[in-house]
Length: 217
Image (cartoon, rainbow, N blue to C red; front, side, top):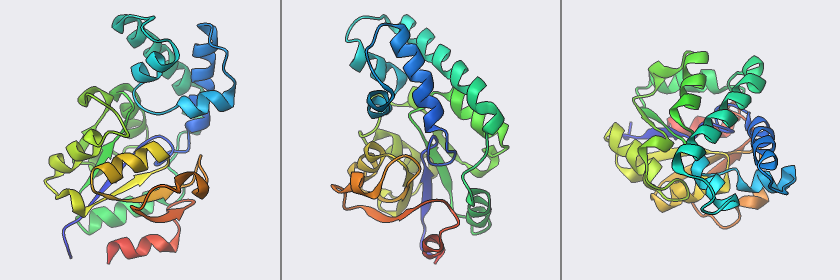
């Protein structure tokens, strides 16, 4: 088998939780005075937490204040989503098959480790992933390619041999900027929202889609 690696975004890609993030951010942002509806908050849900806050409130908060607001939002999200924590359908079997074929895997997420740990430990997944790149590990988040380049470097796999799993256009753009092909999980975005990218292998609703079988060939 040709050497390859699977790189996974986390939120919306491994777990279907983006609605919970949107509601948690909406509560925080409107509490701070932002006049945003849920659809507008959804458009801002990409990148690091401090990047999001800076987009909404330019130069208003200190780094320490943004860190505290970030944790406030994540604690609210975890409390709401915790009872529903589970993998997207079919991902458990997919991960086990990849591990059985010795395909190295990594997580590349704009989430802070507080949230990544919440998922990996809550679902006992840590053993599948040789490399984990969080918001804390990069200077600039997606669509900058740094997240996925660091994943590949951590696995020791060439960039062109990495297949990224993403749910968001900014994540697909990050993969394209890194020279990587991408599988799109349509949990929160429609196919039409990915029209500008030429690195997409396929669109799938979940990991039971037979299109994914070719990734193991």
